[in-house]
Length: 138
Length: 138
Length: 138
Length: 138
Image (tube, rainbow over all chains, first blue to last red; front, side, top):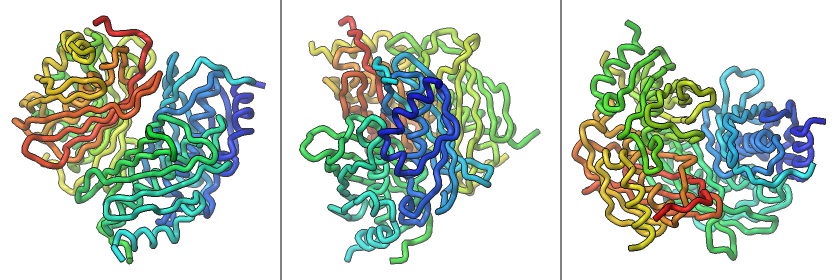
């Protein structure tokens, strides 16, 4: 099994939040990850659409698996989310994360979230992780 | 009852996500809001600390109540989160939102999240809402 | 002449800052723009590399031409810059701006800045403009 | 002379960009800095107001002096700028930078830019620096 896959499984086992979100892995490889999530009732905000923090959570999980896939423990230090369209209950979202810059001390990752059956992306996320010198025990 | 309080109650009634997060209002007034949330097991990430998206969700809810408190429907268009410290299970977090700039078409809001018993803030959030011309029906 | 080109020329005529930066247009079309700039001595910071604000200025100009290319006056409301590598005096930079989301009231644009002779991008910028209802007089 | 002041003078000597911007120090102390800048013609954008990148440059310089004031070399890795009002030619701007979180590996700094004679801030900046282990030679 590839290291990226091993790191994902090791992280996901303890990631009770991603489990609660119902996140499913579609693709896990070095610096690249695709996750799927279906919008449920308890993810809605006061406007009846997907809560901004839930869309962000999906993106953050995708970033985490992509940027930790190289093996080093890499926590998020900054995240930025741009909202274009609003997802509704029952929508099936796909988050694709790609590491756009891999440095010795930090890495930057883009995540684009699309909605099944719709062409234009709904959410755009960009985040930076600090790359510690500690390796995932996998 | 003040308009800010009315808007909060009207939004919160349908905000199943904030309800799920166990968010409690400490203070709700025009352009200003304090919320409280306790970190639960299903909010943890693969590192055993509060998932970045859960901290963001608390901040986003605080921003939403503060920036909608003037009466106009105002959805988030951009959110930025800076991570300084990591909350753990059982931690009681307070999110204080203040509108820092109120324009005709957009408003900017800062949210600082602190942890009970600790002096230095854990998370810093800044977000921008688009101010529609539509009023909350309260 | 295309509208995008006309808007560019009309804006550039008064854009004394882009003129001072020595910005040259490589490509100007609807929602898409490539600019070139050479790093000069008065653009350096205290570390002897390109000042973060100068890299940002190049990106901001590229965003402005791309997001105003549809004809409506569209000022920046939020900009976010991620720094990966540092440019030096004499470096020739290319900034490519693409509108990633075009809404009725706002548009989001990505700008990637690369350095001649180097493969990996140096700077990543993402910004949001408010789309007024006023048209450029071109 | 205080270390913060020594670091400022050492950086400013080579910071040809801040010199070009006409930046003047009003206050330099540990984790805190106030700079002044007057808007000149070559700082204007195509709308006849201060170019977004010039406002950002002022904020970035203020952040640099505040976050390097502890002695460790600390380059910017991410900057976020929110635009509320537009400065015009002749306006005298003040940028106040405060370190809001000082960690071992990174520091976060807020900068608020105000305009002489006006109450409400014009620009809000937040940035993160990586704190290297190398000390400024002062």
